[in-house]
Length: 262
Image (cartoon, rainbow, N blue to C red; front, side, top):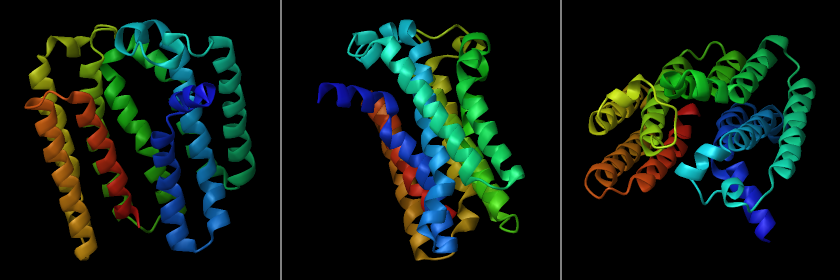
């Protein structure tokens, strides 16, 4: 049981599920074909999990400072075992893209996402100041995949930009949490409070970009709920100083944002 819990912590099931659902739900709504939608979404699940395994393997030393309770720095799992898991998930990601995504120009986006994800640690190590932008750009690719499937739905471009802005803000906040163990960049010269204010402003811009997408009362309620979560996370960050909880609330807001893809 302990082994299973440790592996699940590495795979980040909630974050990986978000990537999977960002393709599954919109495609199912449009096609009413669950099998087809799941097949097109499956690569995103394996790419996401593969990414987290790779990151944790590369970040063992940094996590001893930033996240000592994680399975690898705490010694709950051995690096060789996690490396085997990484190659299994990488193979699953490549296999599902090759066999489930038949269109070459669309499969290119899946491969691009995989490439960006497994190259993430080079950015962290050598271009740390670009890390938040890099993650936000990679996180927007699932929406661009939807654009590739439905090129006439131009509103999806606005959603991709909104997601980029929101993810940029969240990643900047996560970087603040990890400053102690991360490589020094030009961002470290910006005071933490100022950086957090910029991060929340970026997320507010992301929410504002969704306003034209409100077409019924359900979209309105969804956006109000996302805004309330952002306000609550702001309070958690600046007033209560519960910053990990604040970033968790941001993730919940992103889950609610899936409704705008329907």
